[in-house]
Length: 106
Image 1 (cartoon, rainbow, N blue to C red):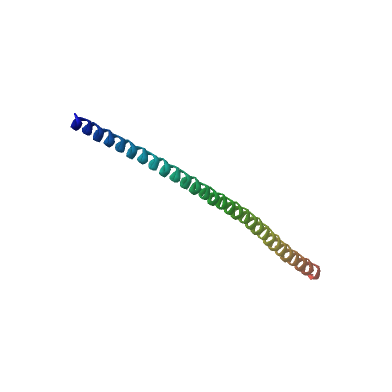
Image 2: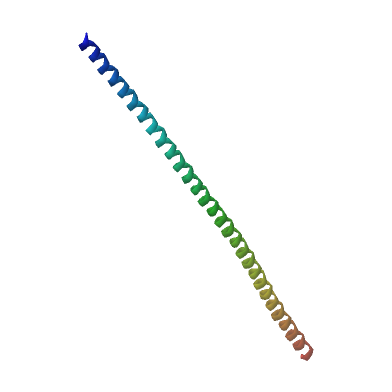
């Protein structure tokens, strides 16, 4: 009888030890999960900040490109006006010369 009680006590002790180990393992897993969740949230926040900074940099680059294109277009327009003005001046000079030659011809 004493041997049977001792075996039952040993079995109960082992079951309690197993249960305690499972509880500790579950708690460890829960804590590890919480830590990983926090780390992932932090990484996500850092990623979102980087994305926002990149989006801002992209906006600035697009704005700068638009300004540069507008400035180049303005310069190209000014160059065309200058070229046209030179052509008009040259044509006016040729017309003036032709008229002068016409006036001096017999």
